[in-house]
Each structure stands twice: as C-alpha cells, then as structure tokens.
Amino acid sequence: DQQVKQNSPSLSVQEGRISILNCDYTNSMFDYFLWYKKYPAEGPTFLISISSIKDKNEDGRFTVFLNKSAKHLSLHIVPSQPGDSAVYFCAAVDLSGGSNYKLTFGKGTLLTVNP
Amino acid sequence: DAGITQSPRHKVTETGTPVTLRCHQTENHRYMYWYRQDPGHGLRLIHYSYGVKDTDKGEVSDGYSVSRSKTEDFLLTLESATSSQTSVYFCAISDEVGGLGVDEQYFGPGTRLTVT
Image (cartoon, chains in turn green, red):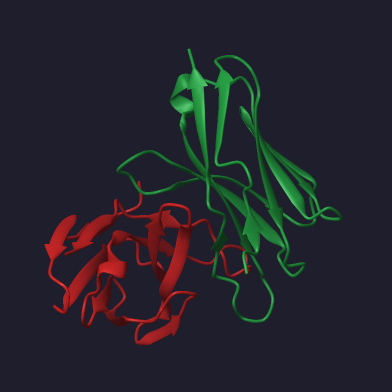
C-alpha cells in the first residue's frame, strides 16, 4: 500500500526552463511534506518542506505547492540548471499520534536538466 | 553538513553470515533512522530510534535488529544475511523543531551491502 506516489520515474527538461515534479498521497493524516534531492553515491539532502496549513512555500528557485483537497503536491524549479540533475524524493509525515518523526517516502523522480 | 558517518561504506558478505552496520553522529540529535534504498522502491524505513535504548520497527523490519546504547551510535544488524538484503543502507538523524517533533532528516553517505 503505497501512501506516497511519484508517478513519473523520470523527467527531462532544458536548462533555463521550469521543472515540475509531482507527488500524490493517499493518507489524509499526512500534514507535513518534504522534498529531498539525491545525487548518485551520496545520501539524500533536504531541499524544502511545507506544512498543511500552507499552500505554498518558496526558497529561491524552489517552490512547493500543496493542494490538500487533491492530496497533491508539486515542486517547481525555476530556472532549471544542469546541477539540479538528481533524483528527487517526496516525503510525508503524520504529526499526530506520536509517530511524528517517521517519514514516508515516494519512489523518486530522476530529473535530468540538459544544457 | 551534519556530522553523520556510516561504516563500512562498502561490504560484500555471504548468505547466512551476520553483518553489523554502524551509524555515528556528532550532532546530539535525538532521533536516528535506518533506511534501505532499492530500485523501484525509493527509501524504506527499517528501524528508528527516539532515544537511547528506545527503538521501534519501520515498514521493512523483518530480518533486521537495531541497538542504540549511546546517543551518538545506532547499529543495524542482519542476523543472517540473505540475498534480498543486498541494498544501499542509509542512516539519518533528526531533532525536534518548534514542538512539532519533526525536523528535516540529515542523511549519511550510505553503505552498499552485497550479499552473495
């Protein structure tokens, strides 16, 4: 039972254009969401997060949008750079019930930014 | 970068042998986690710890045990390694922020384990 879904295994965009990575979730108890980036042979690194009380959070070139009614979030990267080429993981947390330190990850999307 | 190391970084072992992976942190963070990453599965939580001697199971805990006798160390043991446990293992740490009980997790560099 996959609670966090990243349905696009890969995405290819041109340098300078917008990259949009999508994530859907099924557990309505999730109320905090995070994006991680992972380069080959390295551990994932935190990128940006959003609480369910917000619908948008922005940090430089990265913006995360949350649509709670659709149980959908997306990560926008503008403008995309070749150094953004990596696997991006969406993760979700249920802050209630005492399990608020367990992340549930999606399978990841490989982003390739072409020069 | 968060002070988190994993050892060994690479290991090849035979089916049926015991294996212990070590995660060491210098950040004094409360929470520590072990994940495995496999193609087509993303990151899956094996076990986690919310304090010294306090551990609990994740979604793929069968065949694995953990121990945390000190804040800084979290050990993952495969009692009898199987080929299905060939994977990349990541340790992560986190602490509490603003009373939410969750902060972004900081990951170690990973351990590539091959069970032949």
